[in-house]
Length: 221
Image (tube, rainbow, N blue to C red):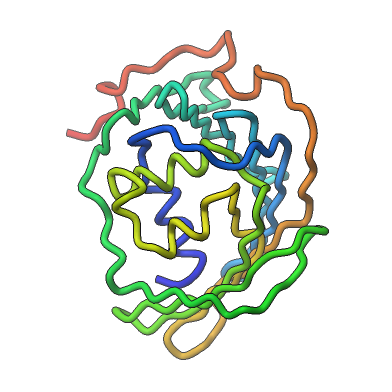
């Protein structure tokens, strides 16, 4: 599990345990990612205690994710069917993920991405030998992202120290690369735009004409 994989694991597996204080950035971050010869573009929108994530472009999935840290709710939006799922994140739905095999080192190096300075970290997964690096910019995320990270361990006091350092104060990984155990690049990503701007509240709630889908309908037997 290298740099990008660590980031995806954090975002994909975390649920909010408590709303935490973090950066108050409002605006858009656009990431360009290349993996396996394919390139995709992702868009992150931040406002107050909420965030929205979706892919963009012609090949993008017709879906979005909205997370509201204050309400402790995650919405999974499906545009093609005009439905959404509402998932409570008031308590973790699974045991905290262990990061004992993940070694994170702050290199002391700095970079600049999309006009924002960032700190470079090296990452190594001792379980499979994969490595990577990513660059964390401060002040470009918000309480919603910080809250998602907090819940990974059931509360910020149980985080590994490197998680607390990276994601406090609006930390966001604006650039990174993954390599396998042989040092071959598997994926890389970089923010191509970080734009503070006022965003309408409607972007952070399900569309009014979408139908709420009962979780029992989609839960596997």
